[in-house]
Length: 391
Image 1 (cartoon, rainbow, N blue to C red):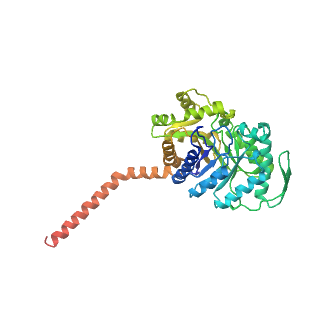
Image 2 (image 1 turned 30 degrees about the vertical axis):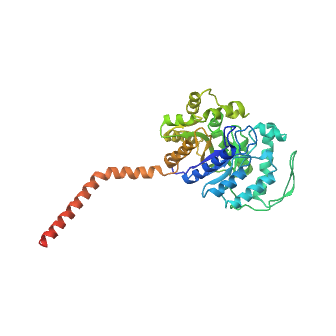
Image 3 (image 1 turned 180 degrees about the horizontal axis):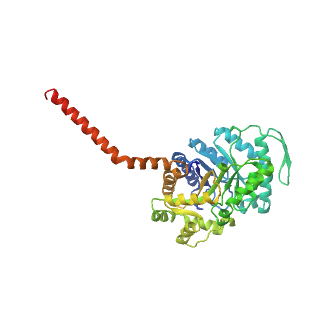
């Protein structure tokens, strides 16, 4: 593969209710620092306000702190729930972060996934997608034009709205729209020429829709006169990696049951429905259904390759959904193994060193003989010179 795939994480984050939230958030920041050292390209942090597990209320605050503890990794909102916010303030905050991070931010947007969030501010799920469409339209106008924006709907009333800072990034930082299985995300991404975050890429519906999503984006881009780029398409998936399958299975005994229970009984998010009543069934579902990969680096490689083929043309980045199935040490080891063994397969670094090793192996007998002969000749010359000097 000559294309350099980017790698990153999508950090909701998921934490078991009742644990120390200060320590949990600190651990999330430590994870981003670890990924920065391991060479990961991107980290996206979510926005949630209820249900006790996904405890990041502001991706912008998390990104600001993480930017001060890292050097290279780019930081994205994964995602800002646009229906909850005035779009003018969404644009203002991300532009300020763009300056503070010297261009290391990305803006991910979505409608808001947890009904228990929206209901607290009088929003139902029937409203959020329409508000995302309205809000993203305003945000993109503000970010890409200096013309004032006037817009009014049932929730917002903007009058000659302008940004009072222009973006630091030139021409603009990455903007991406979230998608699970419906065409809403790819429709908006194509309309505005943004990237796409396929969060449900490995669900049955999401996997089947991968090629469809790109087709929708291209159709919308052609209709609206925009351009879409596969390098801006990011697929989100579930993996945990260890040196052996047995070790990987033991690792996830730590927290996989909580994660499954959250989507089975707590979060009203049916697109992420997952079956399984015990750890064995849960691990089997992840691996056997293609939902993810719990096992070795080769299994992770196969999972990404499967998604690449299903996308019918490729994508730009693979983001691992951060899930806390394993304890922190095993989690960091998983990300390190993936960086060490999986990255090279998709970034053009595997074949050159393997080919160089193969060439050297094939030539070794002949070259070793030449080398031995050279040493032998040098020894004989030295012995002759010593004899000529009389000893």
